[in-house]
Length: 371
Image (tube, rainbow, N blue to C red; front, side, top):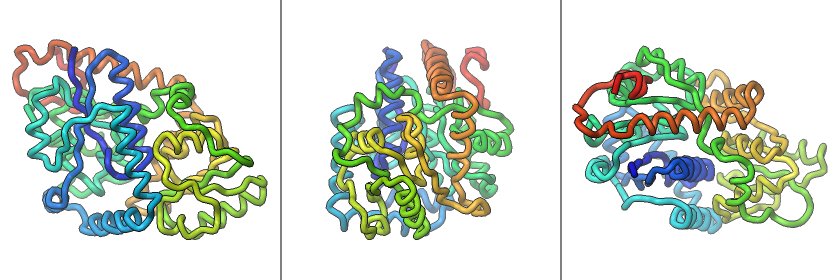
């Protein structure tokens, strides 16, 4: 049985990140492969080295410190982090901890295939070469399942050169948004497939099996915001007044903790799913919040987190998802994503035997390359 090593975001304290990681591993295992997430949690030295190597803004380190301060100051946030780790321990296979690219390099020989995805692991704003699988034997099969670039515009030339060089080693690439596919054409000259986020690969019944029971009491307006903006809460009050639904806040930011509404604090991924499944309606600026509201067939009031003229805007994620749902529906998206993943993994069967190191064109499958 082939072993697949998966690399994605695991330790950012985000429900969407943890649940997309769970969904991807579960689907791969259900296809008959061994699957394990490489437990990459870069330490401070690794983050500084990556900032210098990739040309990222030092502001990202400051933003990370602020986020950790919020997490450390709130007992509910500390419990959330603990429950995410518990979720991984109970429901997923994780490797030994890796704190640096060197440790990923040492871990990689145990896998037959390296796979990265999904989430914003390829966002050039906080680019990290590790998430482009820039380690290990260059001849080992590499697959990208629906990573998101998350931006509208091509990054600086230096980052374009890095992306072009790193993606050249991949045997098959897909991305999560149409905007990302267009950017990859600009950067590499090749167009990858566009496929849904891994959480879409499981149907509502599968997610209901994972979810905790919904909060009891009266119907509620679930409020889940990743960003901070006073206008969010003006919208919440307006929607609450129009619907008669009492706001229930899953707090993430210091701003959300300051609101005078009832909070659902200190819940893990299963509790988050239960809260969405039981909501009367949902108000969110979160991509995964929107996706799960759609999966559970809840009316979602989407508030855009970014101005459209913001060069770092990530609105393309929600725009693409809404277009795909309207055009295809979740069932067709699920079939498309699982079919592509199944085919690409099947094409790696036996490919390690006698395989010579090579540089592969972006977006071409093993079959297309004649392997």
